[in-house]
Image (cartoon, rainbow over the protein chains, first blue to last red):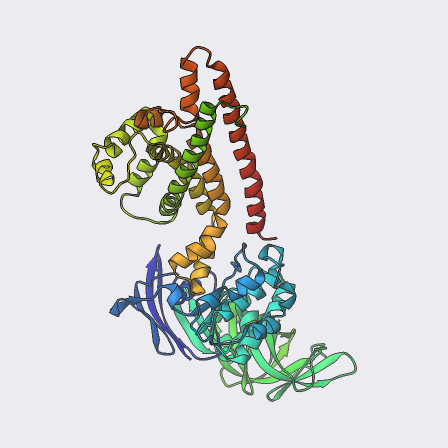
Length: 355
Length: 231
């Protein structure tokens, strides 16, 4: 099922004009705050009527302003996981979960009640009221409630933004499972590169109301064109598998042609992990450095050099099939004489498993 | 109670309870509708509606009573039409219930409107995305959440209806057993020599009923609020 969006909207000096197709899987709308990501999702949900354009899900038009069509939210069959949960305070968790069932087409489609409760681990909470739930629990219930309404697509607007790091880590695996179960396509809003790195099948980068880049997660996050959104957002994601567990507490990952060492990751051999490498943690050396404490030194090829307006530059490096970004100064680019196609070495100061 | 109160006094109390109950009942659904419209909808003439709703609160009650007489009296345009299908207000207890309901209406609307405005519209949006149409959203989300407000508004309206005097006596007069409600009876007893003791007994009844209503609504709304607040 593909979500196809092409809308224009003007509101309060803000001008949105976006077009993209979201293939099955989890599509992240990625960009800084105020870029228009939430506006897009609200337009898909029917909470906002775009000035012009078309939105369709698997060929079924939800909005076609040209034809005068704009379905109300309750006829769109979208499940929406809000940032602030929005559970009904007067209903129990069980009643919240089954709320959408009353209105879903019969016979019920999608996952069953027991499956959803099992997957989200909310069985013990069923008889409580939302007021007695922690933030993480409430968000799990909100996900379940959206799923059980039998939606054609699932929308999530920064569903983790209101949670602390521990609660984020608690919720993220559920979105991974949803993505991998592939029952419904997911449109997920985020401004966190870490979330994008971990979750996205496809990334739609949005900035100032325009789509700046669409593509697979690894490609978009590794594109210097996306990174000016903020230096901290710059980074790359590598898909790897657990290759070996060493006795000194390190785990060796296999990322295509590279081996990367990380502090112990307690996952079985062969398990897939995604690692996130921030651009500022990557140094470039023209010769293989010796006598250096960094464990991960990868032979790479310079693919692209973007000189910014400031003293910085972002260099895109190809490590076999993977792309990584390095943030260096313009002076270093000149001193080292970096140019496209050059063989250099990337020194990784830090590598983290996408949280 | 019949032993303590004289038959005439008891008649006034019973009639007042009946009139106030009916006044509250007929005005409640309209008040919820008006409150929802004023709190949530935008439409031309909203300011006008707001003014009309609040008019009985501002006008002298005698004026409201006289306007009711002109409109709903046997000669009035609406009263005449209703008479034709067998509904009569003139000088009957139904007229007292109509007058009391209209006088209590603004208070009820204000209480309910406040509670509707306190409901987070985001919850109603969420219900929409889960497949609930507007009327269903109202029935399953808004209505349960404003129950405390509805209750508070109803009690307030009931108390107001119990005590309504000016509009009632102007519209339907002061006929014992038909339109002589508690305040009218107190007034009547005070006009005749030796009626003070009867009046005083009715005053005590009025105070007790008002206090009971207030305490009852406090207890009930606290219970509902705890349930709605979700623990």
